Image (tube, rainbow, N blue to C red; front, side):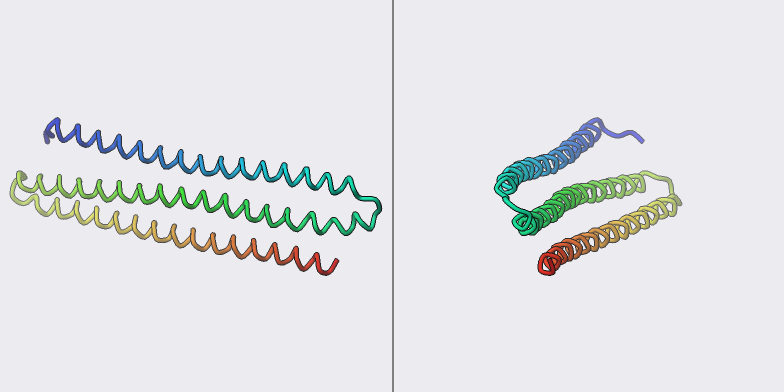
Length: 181
């Protein structure tokens, strides 16, 4: 089957635009992650300097024991918050990339169906059954892709919920340990 050069040029242009969008989304995600890491590094440095100053002012063991809890709790909370933020950036970027992939799959399917419809117009009599079988196969593949996408989203949501539960439990356990000590 011969395709007009205009059709191939449009197809190449669409693929190039999709690749550029994909790269842009990946770079935006990396930029958000790097920004988070820089902010966290600055915060850790400032906290470390403050902790060093406080520890340098300790005069006896009782003061040191009292400081242990005040220094550990905020660090634990910040570490938990950092892990959650990293996860949020990663899942946000993944969701955006997933949406782009879904758009590309839908466009590909539309083009395949359109091409099959054009083939039917010029195909010999009796080939409709083969075309219908190809369309049916495409529908089954799409259904499998949709199911896979739904499962991946459910897995992501469950993972996010688990991370939040673990983070909250970690902070609560540290608070309880502080009260006991």
